[in-house]
Amino acid sequence: MSAVPRHEKPTGRFRRMLDRLSSSQEDLESEELREDAETAGCIRIDDCQDRQIVTVTGTLRTVTLRPRAGVPALEAELFDGSAALDVVWLGRRSIVGIEPGRKLIASGRISMSRGRRVLFNPKYELRPLGRE
Picture 1 (cartoon, helix red, strand yellow):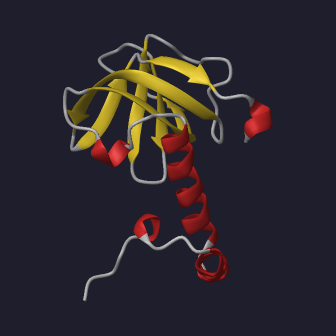
Picture 2 (cartoon, one colour):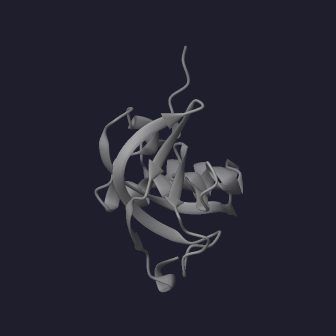
C-alpha cells in the first residue's frame, strides 16, 4: 500500500484538522506555499523542465553575493513547498527588496546547472509584505 501525498488526501473538515494537529511546522508551511503557487496560477517548481519558460512563486530562503566568471551575481534560493530553484541576477550586487523570507513571483527560462534548476535574470514581482 503506497502513501498518498498530503495534497492528494481527502479534504474533509475533520481530516484537515487532524492533519494540522499531526503535521510539523515545516510541513504546514510547505503546504501553504504549494496552495499559494496554485492560487497565483504558477507552475510548481518540481514540475519545471530544463529550457521551459515558466512563472513560479515562493519564498526566498537564502540570498548571497557570489561572483560568476569575475562578474558579480546575486543568487537567491526560491522555495515553493514542492522544490527549490536558484534565481540569479548577473551583474547585480544587491536588489532592494530581495531578502530572505520575502515572497516573489519570477518568470523566465529554466536551465540546469550542477543538477539544480536555475533562473537567470528573471522578470520578477515582489509580493506585498501585508500578504505574508
